[in-house]
Length: 197
Image (tube, rainbow, N blue to C red; front, top):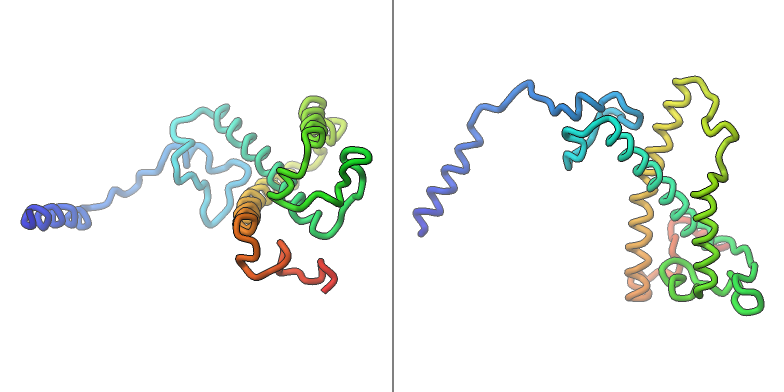
């Protein structure tokens, strides 16, 4: 058995000395390397190969999904950070529950009653259905180079916000399960001026 293991490792190791293929690039890299959001030094980055052999329409739908998820993540990060410093102080349920009484982060999921969730879902549904908060023409009236730069910046900010939200959620969930695991009292610890310290 030992001889078989040594023989298998020798065969596997010999592939390290095989000549490498040169000059072959993925067709997806060639097809989408000039899209908005492609930046140096990585260029078009698709390690999972999700864009291999897809059409331009499919790529555009993926990009639209990335943009929407990025926008939602930016709002989610804002929703984590803003209540740490400011509360609106209105009654979520008149006479019963004020927004000042709702904890931050993951703990808010259980604290918000059905009526509060219904308000939020109705608001998001109206925004999605009627397209509020957009320009009257639906498109920014900017020169092409500036528009491309802003679209790339929005994609990059959305990508960063998706990572930031996941880290906030991980940290908050861990603190929710094991309070004080990090020995800190506040969610955002790098900015002490936020809490009047």
